[in-house]
Amino acid sequence: MIQRKPDFVTLFYIDSNGNEVSANPMTWTRYGAMLTILSAQLQAVIEDKQAIANYHNLLGSYQGALNNGQVGLVAPVKPQHKVIDDATGAVSWVPFVPPLPDAIIPVLAPSTGTIANPNPPADRTDVLLGMVMALMADVKAIKDKVGA
Image (cartoon, rainbow, N blue to C red; front, side):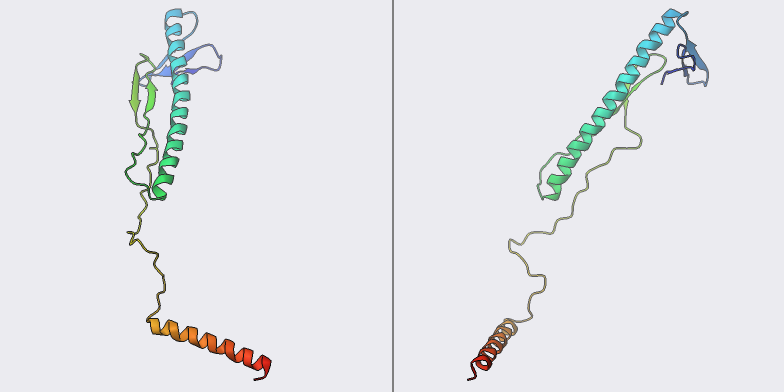
């Protein structure tokens, strides 16, 4: 990315060979071109931040729908990072580094159509016996109260 030197006037960048390329207002043609490219680079930073924020919002909505069991949804498309070349101002698109997160597909248990008891009784007879025993205890408590 094009940067300003400490004098806040001179613009520079490091080319692919590791050489510093700079321009000041005295070399107006190069300086004007570098200012235009710098402006495009700063605008790309703003656009990238907005694209990331939008993606996170869409991903959150998509993840919520998946967690609620909705199927047949289309995942949001990951945006690409906009890169403006320092020397030419050419625009290219590359994946973000680090990569943007993906949705997590929840593992849903297959539905049987009924609500399952996590601790089913071993036998219905046991349930009936438990109910009779509880009623007998209530009857005994009432008998003891009335003195019969």
